[in-house]
Amino acid sequence: MTSMSPKTLLFLQAHPDDECILTGATMAKAKSLGMRTIVVYGTRGDAGETNQDLGEESLGDRRVREALAACAELGADRIEWLPYDDSGMAGTDTTSNPAAFSNADPATVAAQVADLLEDETLDAIIGYDANGTYGHPDHVQVHLVAHQMATLELAPWVLDATYNREHLAGLPDADGSIDTKFAAAEEDLTHFVGGEKWFLQKAKAIGHHLSQVPDDWDPDNPDLDGFRARFGTEWFIAKPVAADSSFEDLGDLFAPKQDWAG
Ligand SMILES: [Zn+2]
Image 1 (cartoon, protein in one colour):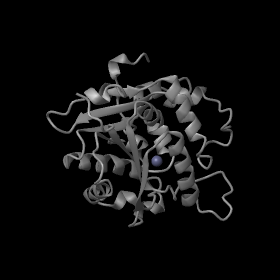
Image 2 (cartoon, rainbow, N blue to C red):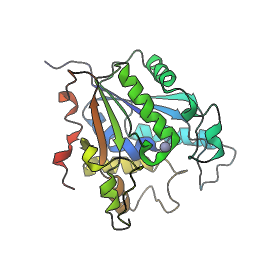
Image 3 (cartoon, rainbow, N blue to C red):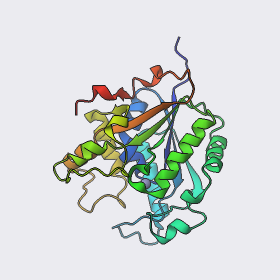
């Protein structure tokens, strides 16, 4: 028997634009399957860089506006912001800011998210891999918070969004070397979301992040080949939270790794 309430997915994100790069296709596909998608951002991305002239606007304000437009493109049902500052890249001054997201206790943040979403019934929490995808302290924090939420049994599944390390190392413009501090090994991946339709929606959504995309990114006619090779497939490591966690209802969204055509 199928429940009448839609499956609800929490996408925990570190910064504006992460929702597109790491999970944009997944959010778009989930929406098409009638699932409810919630995005919670740890920060406003205020320690990032931009090539744009922002005028009077702060980078954080600009990035929030961009994220709201991108989330609308991807059909997000609910968007929330946690009250933390962007930690900036590892090794920069902003990482020592006590208000930075990465300096918060993961258990405290998990409880904050749980409070914020106490009226929701979550079917999966999507965070990032243990390396924080590419090592950004706020991305590592997303991993810790998502798994802390899992220990509170706030959803039957927690999935780490990540990259396929071997695939990226094998691209024509890569040198083939494997960095074990980057993302995840192919053997550890469990599921993926692929498909040109969802990729195109993701590419359209990222066009709203004009403060972050390369200078030559044309939102109306983007050159997608390199972007598709890197980000066309979204990878996940799915972990059950309880012994009886069933993947049945999520299986229409996330395909098993063995189905990947490469
Ligand atoms: Zn980020």
